[in-house]
Image (cartoon, rainbow, N blue to C red):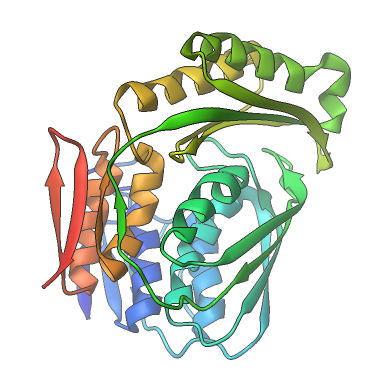
Length: 337
């Protein structure tokens, strides 16, 4: 039984999600205490229960976890032999955090696994959008021979949710180390989306124009798209990404926040990644750490976040690896021990 302190550093949900992914990979049981102890509302929230439920459905596990629990134990079993599973989310909680928790299991898959998610949100504050997973995380994972697909059938915005997603996880064949240390930006892609219900207010176009106006001084080719999507209720979001170095920054729209401010926030965040000469943006760096632990490698990011440090603490509990963090050069490296 692996014992984990859920209050380590920021003490957020990242410790739980990483533990669930690694428990599913290694089939090692774990116990977490002090879950989200430092938060105003400590213990498991609905979105954390949904991550537990999702991994449990993959591992044929039954848990008695409930909202507000500050301690849980998880005992994994064999991966499901089903070809398809369905996950239902009754709230507008982040579907991307659930997908990110499930993605690492492809390391142990023997055949394709289809996942259908009904409910939840595709654009959530404090979580990457599903579009970010599609356009940033999956292309980065392709560099180490990981093949996965995520299709958005219907977007979900807070508070209504009701997204519809279909994903396919494929077995990870020939794992390759990931080395990303140099940055080269030749073109940018700006994708601004909004629910059809906001089309009359031209929210997608306004987000796009605000972002592009701040990015133009870079004198880099910009591919730009403003589109309206099927969704329940009102909502919007914007993603800025780059090629050939794959950096990304996304921002969801919020009530009482103007479309211009949303687009500007995304552009300023993206410019910060470029100014720091990142080869991987700080959000992607956090998500790539499990894969660095499994395949090895070294990445240069824009900031060593507490999420990254929390992942080091958690991953080294489960796997025989050692991370090296260079905070000055902003480099994360992992080797087997």
